[in-house]
Image 1: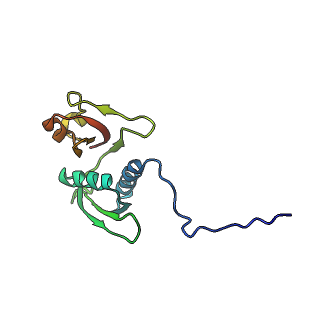
Image 2: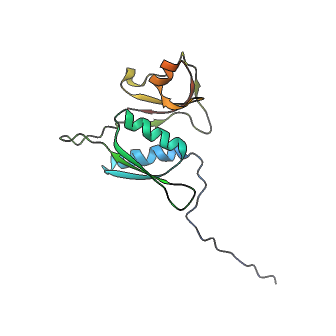
Image 3: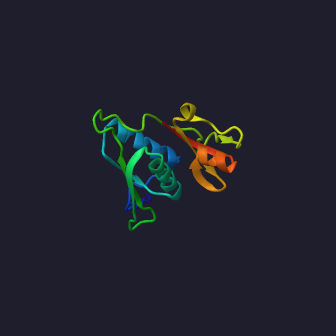
Length: 148
């Protein structure tokens, strides 16, 4: 009879993520629904770019990029709520282009979210930007998500 030796991994919480952008959006959506003030998300360069756009467009109150020992850092996002009615600034956040079905658009057919009241976040050859910036630069790209 042969004995099998089992080796234990040091970090059992490590999981391969299929769609990190969807995880980022879901963490924000869940924190807004639970009325949390701050949400912590594992960092990546594209998530940092999306966070900057959300801050510039007024959907989040503040953000902070923290470096850690490992390969990733951490993004701390302070969510924005109305001071009196406590309604969140983010009403909806939806992933559009998914790993199984990518959605690309040209500069002529860039989407308008809620007739211009929301923001579509586009990944272009010039970097990640809002739909209005991409329209001004006359470039298209992959539609990552809608925020309204």
